[in-house]
Length: 214
Image 1 (cartoon, rainbow, N blue to C red):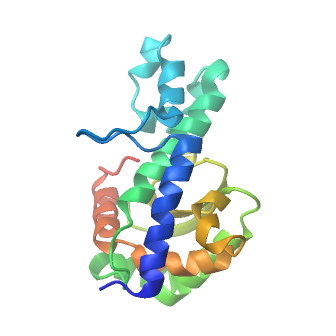
Image 2: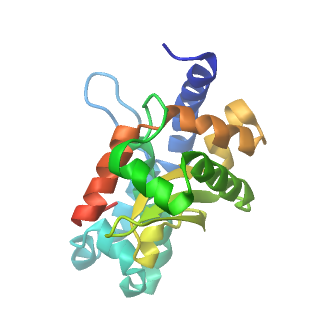
């Protein structure tokens, strides 16, 4: 059963999904009789691709890791909307779990690279609190399994630096304002209660196997 804090966080996040989807358009309409109105987030990215069929054939991962090869006229849209799409694809995938702690190979990597799970949380939360304005805090993963912490402004992603994202948290204010107002540290601390460590472990295994994309 959910604790009150976990229930509040999830309910608050659900409300934010609606508000942030309306402003950034990440959500996609579900199938069935009840449908969302078309949202602009992925539409913006698709819109700039329409007149550039050769560019549209390239996977999003390639566009982001080779952003300098994207025509300057559309590079900002690809950066903002493509980066946001990649970030949120990861973000919604790794939540909805019961929190707790990582296990197995992932736990061993966290112990090795951060000195333990508690230290990872402290470093991650501190880094997320220090992001100025809007942005993200990420844990990146190399092909050898090594983990590192990085922050990015706006919708930038570690993919733009040739890195792979293991997990990350959205510290744009609209991700937490409905419940936490300007108390970003409280939001960062509570967020760990809904991390799906099975999904994070799957991403870790995929990174080591060379199959992790966005």
